[in-house]
Amino acid sequence: MDRVKTINPDWLGKLKPYMEPSVTSALIQIGTSFLTYIALMAFMIYLMIQEYPYWMVLILSVPTAGLYTRVFIIFHDCCHYSFFKSRKACDLFGNFLGIVMFTSFYDWQKSHNIHHATVSNLDKRGYGDVWTITVKEYQSFSKMRKLQYRIMRNPFFLFGLAPSLLFLFLNRFPGGYSGKKEIFSLILTNVLIACVIALAYVTIGLKIYIMVQLPVLILGATFGMWLFYIQHQFKNVYWARAEDWNIFRAAMEGSSYYKLQPVLRWFSGNIGYHHIHHLRPKIPNYNLKKCYDEIGELQEITPVTLYSSFKSLNLRLYDEEAGQLVSFGSLKN
Image (cartoon, rainbow, N blue to C red; front, side):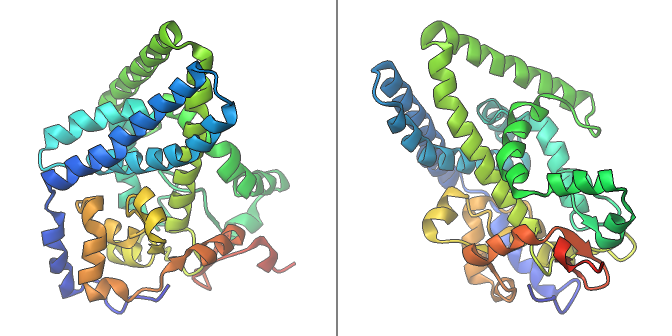
């Protein structure tokens, strides 16, 4: 990704019109995304009740998981109070979606806001990010800590075990940042999720519920984890120490433009325009593409393509001297 030429450019004011939410666009997304997700879940439950082959349910779980990811972007926009004009509407719908997404609204909102405030800051890592250490830090680790880090950064863990662990278990507990509001939200979300499971138990049966919900949740969480990973893990990503850190550079150089084909872009809720999202989190997802298309300065960075994104899997350490992510194999013996 190209280095930006200025730190606080005048053209940032051009982004303001795109921060205006649209009730029409929001309602269309609810219909095409959330209601479609619910309809597909209901259809899969119907197939299970009618004893159709389970492979049919598993096939349908793939597009349903894509919708799960897209609905999570709506949840994400509600956390930024960008999806609706009304802050109260974002709170209400966001809390409701939190039950569907297995994620507490206020607890995740606080964690995510910390992520926005600290992204690419080497001295403020640890909240809402993928664990990334510097070359010097890795070299100072004991053999056991090196092994631990290698496991945590292994793709089989990151995109195999970690997403399910996060959404099914870790999201049930408060983080170190959680206050009373976040803890109450977490408890309420957990109770309501338990109520949904109990309702499923007395209606369709627990087995059917698990066989339908689990593959969708696991696949959706994995898709989401991949997107989040690529948004901040690429070769020339910007990181800096606190005294040199700049929020504009963190957005333009520390957040990628993930250039996806139209179908994948739709399922990912335009979150691939992540540099724009970090510049102005108040821009709702349905305005991101238009913003990119109409403001030339946002197009000056080199995109991460679907092909090139897979190369990022081998980049696991940040080299402060080179200013880029490197592989374990690049370390000098």
